[in-house]
Amino acid sequence: MTDPGHLFTRTLSDVVGREALTERLSEEFVFADLGADAVRSLLTFDDLNDLLATCSPEPPRLRLHRDGSPVPADRYTEAATSSRSARRVVRPEALYRELREGASLVLDSVDRMHPPVGAAADDLMRLVRERAQANLYLIWGGSRGFDTHWDDHDTVIVQVEGTKHWQVHGPGSRPYPMKNDVDHAHTPPRDADGELHLVWEGVLRPGQVIHVPRGWWHTVTGTGGVSMHLTFGFTRATGVEWADALVRRLFEEEVFRRDLPRFADPDVRRKHQRALAARMAELAEELDLDGFLAERDARFPRRTSFSLPWPVEEGTPPAHARVEFVPILPPPLSHDGERVAVTVGGRRYRFPAVVGPVLEALAEHRELTVAELAERAGAEVQRAAEVVSALSRHHLVVVR
Image 1 (cartoon, rainbow, N blue to C red):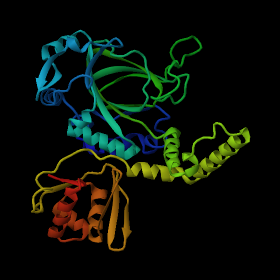
Image 2: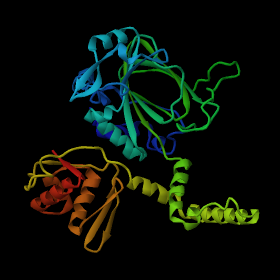
Image 3: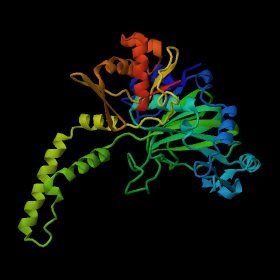
């Protein structure tokens, strides 16, 4: 059975090739059959039942859709009080009724509730170097939860139970549409006879995976039985993000902080505009794409996790304790004499140089026992345990 932590970087990459998941990603449709065993550990109905019972997700995180429209939440939830706060809780019998009648269940951010899905989402983030989220879609029968539509983010769909019919139509009349865009009136692609264009059509079965790029229209319907799939969505950096980073730098420039000469002579206004444009062009040349992407990676968030009791207690974890690196992307290390520095989640951490080999081993292997970490870092076990204890206090590792 596939380790969810390598679902994309290893399993999927082995099937379709690394190039398809990097250079061609967001540009082309991708289909791969990984086999049911490869996804069985991601999510089962037992897992879903436990999530619904223990996490008690409520609208809008959990919601129902039928035939392209949302099902009113009061049809399957009821008011409740938790810690003196009003909330909505799902009524099991009402949820079952709506699902029997053809509603589609959507559960957002399953990666934050179920570790195997979280591990797969982290693996996808390491591949595409962008933030990713996994949503669950569950339906019975031959109905559809949504009309023909496009998504404002790239998606990787993983079928985990049952089957679902997909039609992928391709990009519509507006290439690369965005969530915050000026035009949402674009239309799907059609052939000369007026019918919806088809790039791919098929029935997804457990273990099969497709990648649908941002802005590509698609139609999804049930096949008569049950279907449960996970959609891993991510939004890649665009020129808009680069320009936004450039604008943030303008606050450091005196010429941009000055008032615009509204009431001055036209020549003065034109001179001021030329000064603004010239300085902006200089800054745009300085903010190269490699530097922008490196800064973006340095701000990449880490998944929230906890490592009690080790960050609080005075002792050190034993040699058999498992140590997991918290940063999702492996951060580069910089050495400065007797210190080593690493930037994670936009924060810069500086440690004694002896910590460097431990950080390098963790970045490469991600999860090791204290003893294995000591061996790979060329350190004594007790010394490695002390370093792990210090790193756990900064939420850079978790100890199991």
